[in-house]
Amino acid sequence: MAAPAIEFSGVTKVYQRRLGGVPIAALSNISFEVARGEVCAFLGPNGAGKTTSMNILMGFLYASSGRSRVFGYEPGDVRAKQRIGFLPENFAFYRYLNAEKLLQFHLRLSGRVLDDPTALIASLLAKVKLDSYKGLKIGKYSRGMVQRLGIAQALLGDPELLVLDEPTSGLDPAGRKEVRDLILSLKAEGKTIFLSSHILSEVEQICDRVIIIDRGHMVRTGTMQEMLAEDNRVEIIVDQLPEELELVVKERGASVEREPHRVRIAIDVAQKRALAEMLWAGGCDVISLTPIKSSLEETFLKLVTAGGAQ
Amino acid sequence: MNIDTETAGATTTATTTATTSATLFDQKKIRTIALSTFGSFLRNKVILLFGSLFACVVLLMMTPLLGFKAMTTASNAQQMQGFILNEVAVVVSMVSAFGSLLAAWAAADSVATEMKSGTILAVMARPLRRWEFLAGKYLGVMMLMSVYVVAMLGVTFLLAWLGGQSFHVSFWTLLAYPMVRYAIWAAIAMFLVTMLHPILVMGLVIVLATLIQIFGSTASHMPNWLRLPVHLVLPLTNLISEQRFLTITRASLRPFPWTNHLTALVYGLDYALVCFLLAVFVFQRRSLSRD
Image (cartoon, rainbow over all chains, first blue to last red; front, side):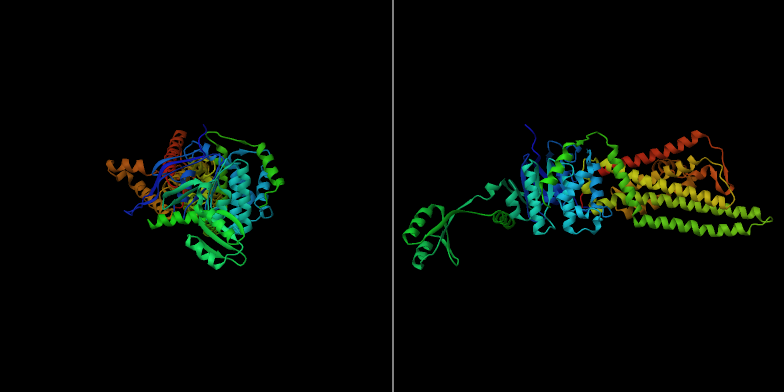
């Protein structure tokens, strides 16, 4: 069986401080796997240890203990790096180069031998909408343009695995949508994507799996479906709700939210049939009856807040 | 960032004709890093300052030289010749010492800047080994120093020519000796910068150079128990100085057997290699992130 794209097993990272400073545990016993072809979000509040984990994954940092592998190789092994495209957080470039020269430099380092490297570079620059700025020095780029260039360089080596640390950071809404579409198209090509982001609505749209960490500890991991699991409640939308009926509904433990042309009623799933029949009988037109799912943001906040409270 | 079918198609076409090289040692990548490092030096403000200072020193020293030359008459020719050659010797020594500082600074800065700015992350995310990165940086520094050595040689010959002297010495010695000396200083600085801040590295390099001068001139008076460790630890840059066989003040070349040249240069290269390997050893184990 092929090794998973990413494997973390009991990874701990402690930053040792010089001159007797208190050591800081950035990661504590983190374990997870990312299968090939999966789009996995790595979530956590600021300082949770996401970037530290990504740096360990790329071989920039060494774990204090535990085991990590990328396609079965040690992080930092060139055989692993040949298959990775990486976008660091706050990507820094040689400011005196232009986009074309920078991509040429990275292409040479990637070891890819192409018949026509300029065609690939031109297509990537077009893909990230920087083709009209290819002669401009990177030092004069805006934050969003630098981020786009970072995405182009991550795609340069035709990687099997993309590690993206805050890929939509610094981008405007249109740019964010374009990156989202790009990730979806890469997903369709079968690429494995491991990304961190604070924009959970986007993560919800593109990711298959989610890993949540907080203060260096694993909080939860699961598929997106599991994360957005049903809340054991249903929402019934009716056209109107007489006041006498509202009292009865509330006595059954339901919550009622009135809107201009409809009323939303949320109730425990066990009572949905009885309540729906009562509403019909009471002359209300039931427009819809849907299970309530919590959003990723709600789940995330619940988990992180609970962890923080503990 | 439209993902239109046309550009996606172009990417696919380019990709299908691609092959990825996966050799154990890729000199193309080292060369790429070296050329990029050299290119960055040519845009570096401190290097430009070094270059300007170099030009200023040469121009400044040419003034008295030309003055002596103009004052030379039949009666004081020998005395003036002495002044001129002394001056040439001073300039050459200054420029040479300047080069050592430049080599150390360039090596320290080339690594430290990448770490500080974070550009190293994108570079090291490529299939590049840490030692290959360091080797590329080191080669880039040596490319800069080769330009400096050629310029230094040009200045030496220009000043000697202005002074009415010519050196009867083969070119390779005037190129090889300073290059090996600068290779040592660059390797020392590269080793130190894998652990320390570049400013601290430069401070240590200056201390080291001063110690070499002190111990170099007092080596014969040192007790044996001190002489051996000093010789082992400190680079004997005096040994790798072209001034050992070239006496500028007399514009003459001392007889020097080729085996002597060989051992002196091999000693220097060996010292540089040891320092470089130490740098690789430390760099291999350190964190590359800005955390």
